[in-house]
Image (tube, rainbow over all chains, first blue to last red; front, side, top):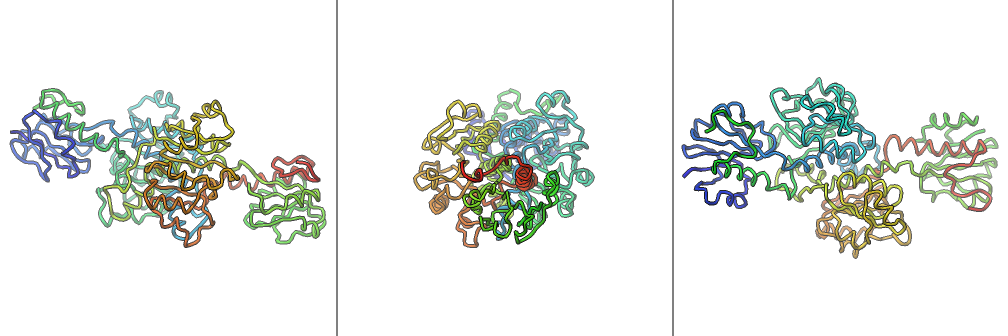
Length: 314
Length: 313
């Protein structure tokens, strides 16, 4: 009997096994995938799948990630080898947009910093002066599904919003009530810069020391996307040196972050445990949707979350 | 003509620019004395009563850079022909901004999750972050700030229920809210936000009975006044998990003393009476007071007078 191997240790087997009923397939959570009987391997966003998996699983037909971002899959190599790469798009767009705006407002109003200030015996807002939200400029990098929702939420709470996206017609950005701008202009003018781009070779370290230097010294950075979009060491230096005013990070170079993760010592940093996607409603959606795509594959249908159809699918 | 400012944090260059147009000079002094003193700028820590006229008999106006005016002897000063002025609405937008920031912070667990990462934990969360879109917000009070909050929360996709004794259904609907009874609003709310002043009718409005109406997963946000809430009853409800948590920008004693009990409550965000603040509102509180002094000295009526001198309202 063929097997589906899940490498994500948090995968809820009890909630997902039913999707494969009647399909003559085994489903297991393991810490490695190997064997001629393995037809699908499913991972969490912090786990990677490269083409070398085909050495261990020569009959692999599907590589899936239970996340919207799929930078953890070597899509080019796997697809060229006939493996279907599958992700879960759109299951948490509203949650990420809510969390992003929550972090932008928490930074502008200095909410976590002021809470800590009171607990250290301080009072009055002056050490971390809160700023007006209404009229502050939110710069959205990446105007896809989530970027659009973030822009709409920002406008709702009174922010002005500008956005940049090389793959979106500026007229479509303007139609959403958002000013289309170039990346450099966005960095130079925004009170809060928020990242909603996929991690690709060309977006790796999009926010590096030079980009941080372009930002205002009273500006904030929010990253609920992927850690690789930001040069982590350069961000730490920018916060310590006052190049920018603060940052909120929901993603880290290593997740969970190890004990020596330097961001814990950075000033004016708000740290989140990759939680932007989460709500009780969204919690099980990536797992159930990905396993339903496995079932589709086994029934001879095309998975809904297929990233790119192989020319010669297995 | 001289205006004496008794607040040593006041930006005097800005006050002087305003008073230039009436030919008055402003200076900081702890003493208010002299026949040339015609106006006084003060603050909540600086009490002024009619006795000021013994040393400075020609004072015509006293203005405070605050909305509260407990520190002004309005009756005594008005009886002696002195205008008493305060500032209002100088921070409406800031309070709306901070309140909606706290509503989002509660529902998305921002402060709790930051603490989690710093303590070396990643998963599971002590309380689940929840969607903001579609969440029910109960707004208690529908004045200027309350109606602005309703408008913003509705635009952000929240289902807003409004409790107001004076506003009608249509007025509330125009801002994006639904009028509700106090009991109904508290019973359905994901978040309860207090947007009302302290009156005999609202003092202690969030007591043990009101807290018992709230959902166990609901949050209370208070950026108004501490006297609206029975602080001990709130602490018991939060500690016992009868509500999910709270965010407080107003405490019974401010600044918070070291033994403030809320410092030990779980799922509690404490803010140092910060909702009013931005650089703009801070300046405006000083500028608006100086503007009213200038109006009086120019023979005009001040915009935020507490009483017409010499009697009447």
